Image (cartoon, rainbow, N blue to C red; front, side):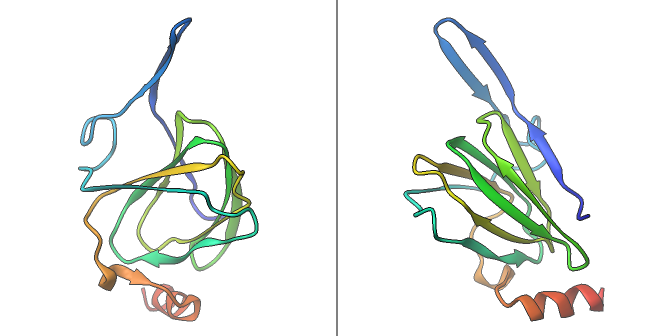
Length: 134
């Protein structure tokens, strides 16, 4: 099974509501260089379908849920993200596919670097070849 790293954000709850806190380079294991989120993804759509050569990310469903399929080039595993205080660390050279988005899903991603198209591997066979070459 690929290494699956769950990430627990600090979260505090009281009768007035809950708060989730994360400090880059202190709580999060990298400097946060980019933040983005997906929402309004139809349940029948798949997102991701790529790997990154060097980028590390933490994905968290701040609302709703979605399914992740992670593949390290040798094995695949699936899991569901559904807690706003629990994230998934996605290291470099991990193929990811996201699916089964709930209607209210908001998937937040913290990234270790700015967008760089040259860091993406968007073809699964190219990804498998890169893993074999390592």
